[in-house]
Length: 352
Image (tube, rainbow, N blue to C red; front, side, top):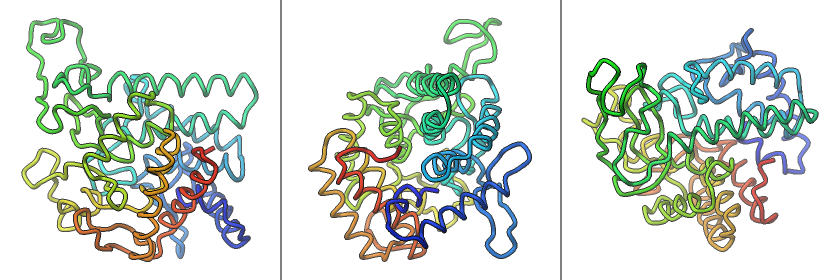
């Protein structure tokens, strides 16, 4: 579905047929409740729901762009409404259940909820005024919640990021029974301003999630000032050298968000843990274009072209050396390069 964003612009019937077939295959293998699988095995046709969190939202966007299916869109979005498990206005997810399927993102993910805003607004284009208005209201409500809870203001105040996990009334520091509340301490990027990557139970992620922050821009969650702050941080942190690294700082062994299951694959500056993913570069260039920074976007597109040439549209590259890693000939790497080209040529983010 991410490949579809750019691949739909290719004047190639074989590509278009493949995109249509993907939409149908995922639709026809959805769960009874409306969940879309993250993949379907090409040999056995067995659907895989393990990394379930974001596939349905991308399917809604892909369907709206290429082959609208209103009834199934309603069903999928109904399933997502049930993922607001605590009625906070935000989706919750299990650990490692989105595109970072071997990483510790959990609870209320930034990327997932920004994608939810995009999917709701994309779906709104398919319906009449009353139904579209309700979807737009839901999108605006989610965006407000993201800004209320995820935006870190560089002030070391972690209370507002975990307050939604309090189960009893009381003062900010003590509950109604006088018991002290546990407030996490900000340890990394203390003076920066950005959207936090996830909100857990009285805990938060502290690294800068590139895709989550870029989707906040593209979804209109971030205002102009926040957009400038995010893009400035990406440049100052050299996340855009290739572009773009998935996060910073990389999680190190011994950190609270380190997991034994990372093994060697998620070593610092590798894979989800700070690796360079070419598909992310497409979202970065789109965000630059939306911010009016077309000159910077053109330079970034040149670097992305070189990266894809060096790695032959590889899956990911090492975050420090840029060396190609993973698997070459990745459809989302190629598709998001086409998407970036289209955004720059149009002078606008071509997501819808």
